[in-house]
Length: 422
Ligand code: AMP
Image (tube, rainbow, N blue to C red; front, side):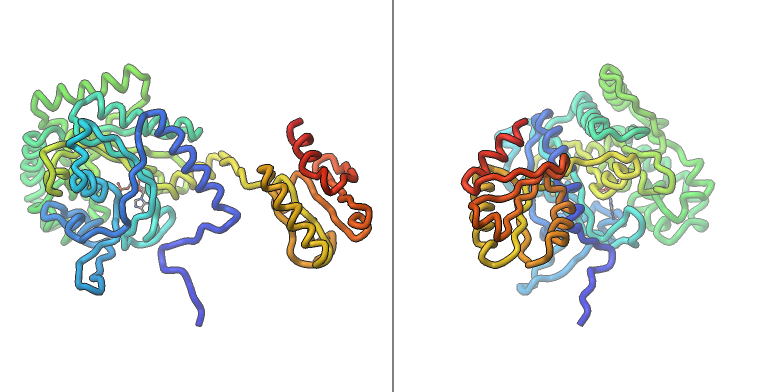
């Protein structure tokens, strides 16, 4: 039998996992500055958490991994992070103790999409949700956080595109205008769009098939139909962004794919050659109905999600190195079973002193073992041959200076600690 990975998935191999660890560490570091706590929800939920009546996005109607468990319960692997977080927020009544709950999550999602560059069937997102308060200053804070995070990663040329859908009244008016606008062209649009016009005409604007159709290009924008309150709300969001010098762009056509957004929506876009659609690193927006749809009170939230794979791709394209703390301080080289026993004890003592170390368990030649040590970027080699053992010493070689010294076995850790402090 040959075993292969599932289509659209990938393995993070041991020599690349440090990139993930380092990116996750960066996320935690930045998020703690904003007083945002981590939340971990299950990767599977009862299907109705995602398959809600109001939700007609492709992600939910066509791309979910749905299955029944052995007790015939309908379950879904989460295609995104927000709905599970809100389900938990409601189920644990977090609104009862906290006016504003700010949380972040990092983890895998599953969507049955056509795999391509930057698009997988299992992919990871890091996202933030701020739930419980509706305030333009909070919308601005969330956009500022997304911007700040990108800046701290060192990514250049990334754009923050911002728009508003307005409040429910404005959004309803906009939907009506879209129906009126698209009805004369409906026969020219794809079958999905023929349905979308009744369920959620905003989604026609995100259609990947009809995106070049003249009716899509000339469609009205939400800004044309905002009521006064919505204009004032959006102005305040923009003023807050400007007061922090955030370099955003207005994107009148940006509506985002999901059905639950109102007011502020935004996207973070890189401009890397050859990336195409994978340049969209993340996006988000404000939602009002999601908390009540999942059984909670009428509270709004705002959030965003970044694709971890796309962040890593963008970092690589920008030639930004993530720190690799997994390099070895020390590598022990021995040549037979009896010496390995001594090596085991040396390793134990080194690790007790927090010196990152390892050894080779084969009887390979010195050259073979050295190769392995260099692959781990070991700073020091501890060489223990029969001759050394007879004298009660080891050879310790600094791999940078190539200077080798003889050190008594009982002095190894003290010697290395002193060297490493310099
Ligand atoms: P969405 O949840 O669709 O708004 O996507 C937010 C971000 O998640 C996107 O900008 C991508 O960076 C990432 N993303 C979404 N779907 C995928 C996928 N199938 N594969 C990889 N990344 C994805």
